[in-house]
Length: 327
Image (cartoon, rainbow, N blue to C red; front, side, top):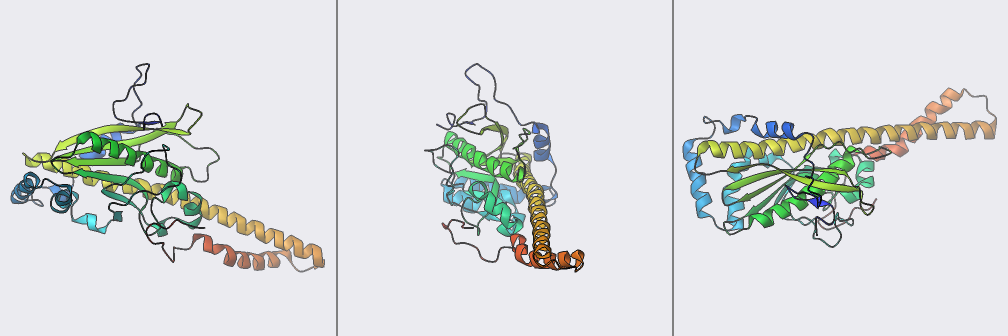
């Protein structure tokens, strides 16, 4: 069903045998996963802590206990400072593949509403607001968990769904204000899965579709897998990959939302200038006044800024869970 809708799993080949494309930034992604982290050095994370972690992995057999007892060691203490959410199902009116379930990740990371200008939120709501304005927007890093008895195939399918929606959200922000969308082949979305001591990391990118019934196609790429128990270095490599990918995804969001906000600001300023010119022209035409036009423009600009400044003010009120944004 997902393949029929243009969402492809790792290793996919088209009917003619051609391989699905990988991200153009694959080497950058691989290097990012390997970058050292001081918080996971032997001096910062003792052997005793790793032994305790392995004991919990081997003991916990259900998903809830895995989330509570195992995964906090992987994500680290910095995780508490990040905007994240657990177990809310996406609620877009425009699903990527009609008739399929929307994502419900066990953990996701995104931007806060007050980081994104009101016009951007308003125009891109159906691609970047999965729940409500009080929850993370543009979620481009997700996690799916299973206990000992969970299936890896189910996890990969869930991660593929998460990645497609994340890639669409990021691509929408990236192209805000463009007359035509740009497809650069880069992945800016990461999906992770954890099952019985094994962490898998995937990236998703999109490309312009050749089909007439959809605009884009989504490609999931397996970046690496990590056995987190049995060896201290194994754990450090896996935890490093998760934390690095989480921070990298945040950096991608920050970069693209800053650009989108700048576009919104420029458009608001242009509207202010146009409004000022229109008012000045109308007044001069109707009164035939000889007052210096520059003075009138300055006065009108001040008034126009008061009216239009609300476009870019921080969010004052946030919606409750389940409510749709109305603007």
